[in-house]
Length: 428
Ligand code: SDX
Image (cartoon, rainbow, N blue to C red):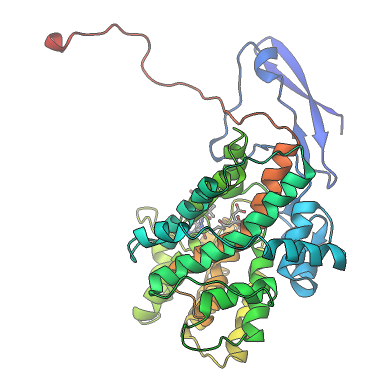
């Protein structure tokens, strides 16, 4: 393949360089397009064909169902690593040595106290508030209690900001859930592992010692790894574009949480459970919901199905489906919802509407079944997604800032009124 792209507009022809990634992906570099063509731009709603950056963090191949973090396959990481190791890998680029991991965890623990005044903000929310709205607000509020912005040119300052948010975010997640449950806002224990500590903060009851269930701990570790990053998805792109204005890390993360909340994105894991529950209460009539999903006049979509990039099985969905069966079996839970999910998936995977559009189960289709088995309320499912995605957002923000990328400011094509004169009120 030649290393240029040719463009013909009317009588004029232009050449633009091609750039190729380490996995042989090719892009047309259109940085000079508007100047070279005296104002012509590209347009691509939803950025289905447009790359926003060159990144070395996550590689995914939607056609082949491949996902790798810093070159390691998601299958290996989910099987062999723990979440804190994967967080370190995503943020700093390599798997940590045992000394690096120990220091990372120790520094996180030293930064896992949240200013007690934040509890006043938590108290101000009604119990009916959606946890994603609470979490986004609390994360932004961290800026008020940690006002110094990140000096991204200082490795030490960047590291300190990372361990600060990695320490405080799980506390905010636990307080968000406990607020809804009317439970005291607590802390975990420095004697526990990163994920065990999250479990203790989330699940402990004030009148009994909390005992870690290893089945749940392993399942949660795996789920957090599987959600940790996913290249330029909607919420990560939001974190990057917010951060490109040089607003701080915490405020940028808060925008990502809001974007993730949407039912077409991370909010889908809650919507899947609500859909499966509705099907169960409807006598398990999956065919009715399949018909609704295919009916263009019906806004209903089969939640947990389809993906902007994966036109094959989402590799994470495969791993989570297996984990869901294992966790329910190990916990001795016979949840009819899992059977409905499997039935729906089998039907959709043999239905021409879904097959022709290459709609497969995605990461959100089975994850809620595990969260439910863990006793996590359905409104907290997307918060759990955010907890997993945190290191990915941090890594992407850090890459964008340390690469000194310009402020994100897309162009547009205007299709409104042409110039017209003002009409005085009494003449309208
Ligand atoms: C996540 O980007 C990421 O990486 C995201 C994520 C991550 O880790 O960050 O992987 C996490 O967000 C996973 C996706 C969770 N969302 C859902 O499960 C919601 C249901 N899915 C859809 O809304 C949809 O599939 C999207 C939003 C995920 C993708 O939408 P696209 O890429 O814009 O595709 P589209 O809407 O253009 O759909 C193409 C066709 C359309 O039909 P036609 O116009 O061609 O006839 O497929 C149809 C759509 O109507 N379609 C569906 C469908 N998804 C797409 N029809 C019924 N049910 C669905 N779920």
